[in-house]
Image (cartoon, rainbow, N blue to C red):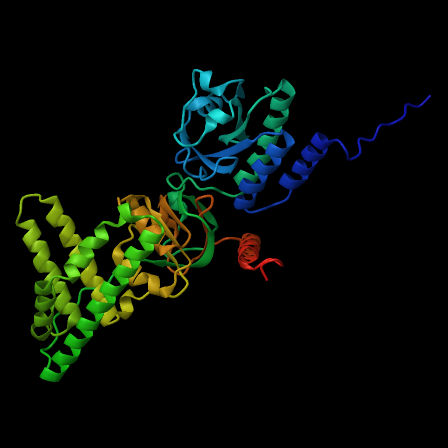
Length: 447
């Protein structure tokens, strides 16, 4: 007598979730979608409050949390060396590690402000690729230890995620530096960085730039001098008003501690000797750019005449930055102008960019590993566009005019993204704009 088959139809929440997850990972998708949806689905299947997806970066030595459900603001910020913490140990041994109370585990590593102690039940499994580890998958919950069956299923899910991570080509820039041809190319490249201002943007890459040095021009006649001086006075006033506006914006966002340096710029602009010297040099040096360049050189020489005076050195840099900005506000330098709506890349961001570069309404900013200055975070917050920093190999892979997708929610810069990634980003942006619209529209009771 034939045995009756048993069809496991829908209704078992766990089985349904696992099968849906398998179908989800089987289709190609942007890395950002995988990093968002993967942890969300896994957390739901295992009834866990926290699910984190770590990706192995650098030269295979650093684990960076790129996907997460449960910890606000942790993506891109939590980083571990292989062998560090329970998660790092799991990758080092290439075996799952679990703990009923993570804080009592010998390898536990605490992160200030994360609040992990609320979710002590912990399991980490390595995400294995064809050539070795690609990252780690971590689940945390308040109670109920993970069973051997849970860990086995989770390990298989890590394998399914590995395929998606591999397809995204998260680049080890040091290992593949020779693959980039001079002048750019059409190859898709994904560069990791540290998220600073969340959001996503798409645009043409444009390198941050400054006015070029100009040779002295012929002396101006009296009318030309008066016109240039009038322009310079106007530019000084515009710059001063703009910096006051930035200071007020910082106050409203409770960033006062981080913008004390704006006071230095206002002090410089309020220095009548500085203004008078610049106005005087307009007639001598043949124009505004030449006059301001000379003022900046004079200040720099004064600073250099003192033995390693850090205050004067910093002030000299601020004067030079301000002179460049005022020069552009007074007489635009076509060689230093940026295209509108561009995705800006550079080694550093300065007040010049808030006064000048911001006028082109950039869609986002990606800065190299040289950008970790004390002012960077505040300047990016004031610029208020999606931004990441610490992008290694930025100028090796990104060239002016390249189309790039900036995912500052996960800390990723995708050079030459696919059409699918572009479509997904635009859909995400529409969803975000729709939610924001819902929040601003009055309800029936309010209307």
